[in-house]
Length: 226
Image (tube, rainbow, N blue to C red):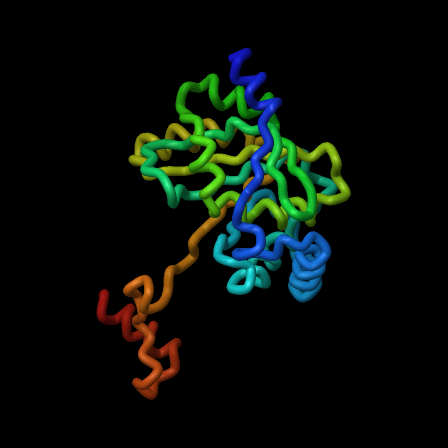
């Protein structure tokens, strides 16, 4: 554990997606996220957990803003970010070996104490550094977190890479994270694909030439399945 702690403290994750999936220019990215948050309207509640998409910001930035707008920044000390694995086959969950995540807007500090607590359960693997740098599901949440929490210098994050889980493993991880969900100052961000729609994903049930609006086609799909 001492070696792990030393390794974490000396590690900084620098992601490679900025400039493609979202702007690498700090001022431009800040303006974009601010504009999306403003367009999301008024907060309607105080979220303890949100589900947010992880596509490129040009596709989903405005949608993600609706979720992040429901966060009350001053009520949050710690953010758990759970993202599905796209780059490595994983039959459980994995934790970071880094001490900070760098975003164009600012660095986010890993909660090393909680990271070590989770490691101590022996239910978590460690992310390979190259896999972690290549994984976008967690990274795409970090600039939004950095922006929404910019007034909280003591904020910490816990990135968790989620693999394919059996029902017993789902229950085991649920019990572990439930202990942290009990703390009202912990926030959970669930990073989601939402839907891979289009010919490139071999999923295009909407036929624009059918003459039917999309909602009627969706209704027909429900009938077909039933």
